[in-house]
Length: 416
Figure (tube, rainbow, N blue to C red):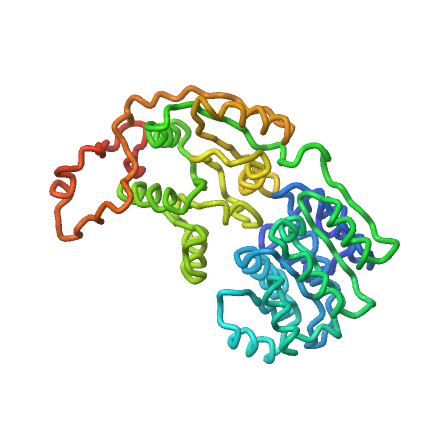
């Protein structure tokens, strides 16, 4: 089926086609007609299945011609807020709809000015939305749509009370749309409290499988001292086009990113220790063409990078749920992806737990690390290279790094 068959307006269909969206995903095919028909829905669908389009397309299709605020989308993180808003602006451009983002860590006065200038759609985090409501700068009396995006994450982050207060400020007659990768009982209760009694509950895909099926799951076992060697061997063997490397700490993310940059890769860095402006620059740089994003779990939920080929767990996640969230950044919108996790002998039990929890198969791979055995991660606090020194001078006294010239494996690619 194509978008033309779902009942949306022809101008919007043409706009979607210009964005290279021709065929709806499964969740879009099911949800869009129901939303167009005025139904309240709660949707459980795997990460990467196209949930954002499933609610934005019918909302924008059904917005009126006035300059009133008619839709609010509540998301758990600043990054997801910006991402959803960006998609909304692109889809809504055909009708010249104004989209305003509101989130913490950024100027409230600038957001207030944007709201006063007029907004058709607001996308925001719970805390800032509630602040603006209490300041009477965000008025919801004309709302037609309320979307709770990544509702399970909002539950995990302790935002559910804020969400309930926000919903209490909305008009009785509205559509409530709830989208989530999992559906804990607290989310079900929230839906029952604020949705129409005739609401539709939708489960897309295998209820027991929370990861899209077109991801290949691999893992490698290595001693702790040779994790970076295995990382570089993986890049040499599989040649990822665009990848995210996950670490468990900000310090390790800094060190991995710094080492990869010194080896010639184009790298972005994202973790909770960065300011909001730094995080936005990192995401824009990664979307704009950099090959690698090194990140902590701040990037594990909600962020959409359709071109990601590989997710690499340099540090194995603490539990199977974190694995599911990380892997959801790859194989989005029906594309294929690959996940590689580096573990040591003591972490084998984690692989078994992931297999059981996510209902997937994970295959062990043997990759020759010998050509990369001497490669090490930059130690914490090591002084940055002096830009006035020659490459040879910089290498003196640093035996942990071995320069490997381009060879037949990586013709024309950065040396590892």
